[in-house]
Every structure is written in structure tokens, then in C-alpha cells.
Image 1 (tube, chains in turn yellow, green):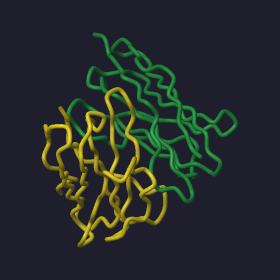
Image 2 (cartoon, chains in turn purple, red):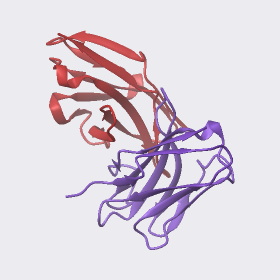
Image 3 (cartoon, helix red, strand yellow):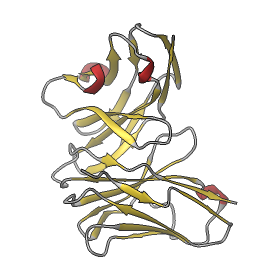
Image 4 (tube, chains in turn cyan, yellow):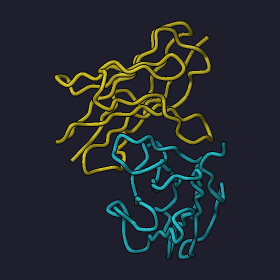
Length: 116
Length: 113
């Protein structure tokens, strides 16, 4: 079956612009996660959805970052007034259910964001 | 709070040699531990995970890891390296009340012919 997909695969924007990154989870997965991976680092958690609601957004770095999942499937990560420091690979993951922290998270290929 | 330390950002082994990638964790609650592999321009793929059942966990591609509570470690091993094992490996931890994964900074494995 299809895995987690993310679009676009690459995004180049200018400082101060607004960007949207999309994640399509595995069909039937109720939990969805966003992570950010900077060069040479491990992924860092941003936000987690259970269904339509954000269950944990403690990783969002500031109020320029926002994410939605209106129908409990596709999610969009939105970044306003982008800064050069936002350049990173943004990873999305999904899991079948959020029964607990032992659930396997399945990752997409990521969106590589470059802010000039 | 949870954290993961991966000792050695780069490890190089010869083909056929033992692979040992180190991971130490810190957690205030019983941890769940994961190893993921990342090939160039691909997403993270789960190798194996510890969920408080057997302490020796076997994963895909011949990898295994042993949970040692006394040493707070979860090192990844493979008896014989293949060229195809060259990739970046990440150790991660989660725990009760914290579903998000906390990752280490990764270890890049090189396999020399």
C-alpha cells in the first residue's frame, strides 16, 4: 500500500514569504506527526494530531508556525514570514492509532525547505 | 524529560565486520526505544523497537539491539556488515505521556569494501 506522501518534495522561497507544506498519511492512520530535521541533526518534534485536533503542539518554535488537519486525514504545516533559520527538511509521520507511545511511526520522504 | 545520546557521528567498518552503533538514553519514565535508518533522499524506516517485552530485539536486515536498563543503553548491532547498510541511523525514545519521538543526532555508517 501507499506510504506517507509529502508535497512538494522541495520548496525554495524568499525570506518573509508564506509557505504551506502538505502531508498525506497512510490511509486509516489516525495519528499524524510533524518533525523538522536540520542539517546534521536528528528530527525534532513539532506537533502531533490525533484525528482533527492538535494533541501536542509543544514543539512549534513560535507563532509563525501553524498546522491543521481539518478532516482528520491530510495535514498542512503553514509557516508565515519565513526566516533563513527555517531552512530544513520537514518530515511527516503517521501511526495507525495513538494507543500509546510504543506505536510505530511511519515517515514520509520529507519536504526540503530552503529560505533565501 | 527524555533525551538520547548517540556516541560517534561517523562509524566506518569493513564489509563483513561487526557493526556496533551506540545509543544511551535518559528518561524519567519507562522508555520505548526505536532505531530508524535513513537512506539518502528517503524517509526514516523503522529497523526495530523495544516496548518492554524481550530485552533483546531483532529487527529487519539482520540488525538487533539489546535494552540494558542498568546501563541506560540500547546499542544496535549486526554481525556482518553489507555495503547496502551504508546509511544514517537514528536512535529515538518515547514514553508514557509523550508520544512524540525524541531523536539522537544520528550516526552515519560507512561500509568499506
